[in-house]
Picture 1 (tube, rainbow, N blue to C red):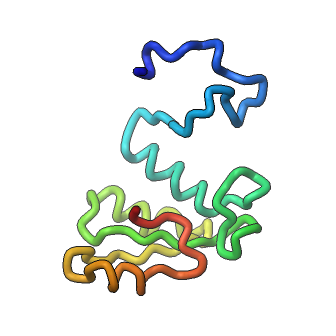
Picture 2 (picture 1 turned 120 degrees about the horizontal axis):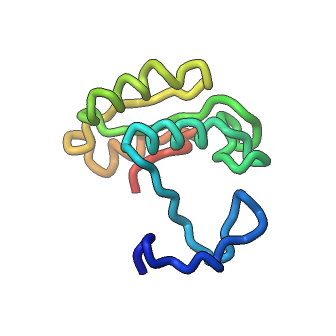
Length: 114
């Protein structure tokens, strides 16, 4: 099913969830998606986010990103989200391999490769 043909009747009365059981969010640009992901990482669990640094409260959190991301994404991850307390580790995934990636994960990593 495409987004254009998704039934409108699947929207619930709750503005944060839909009744279709879907897990998709659509953005107009990659920058918008990146900004939303960063804010989600820092949001408290009660606010619908990843739980910040400690898994519950607002603020903080860690993002593990590949080292050769788009320049605008790199600037956003290294500068713009600092006031939220979000920290980013840039890693060369090819050189790190699976073991290096696992070692780069921290208890407060909220966004990571899958």
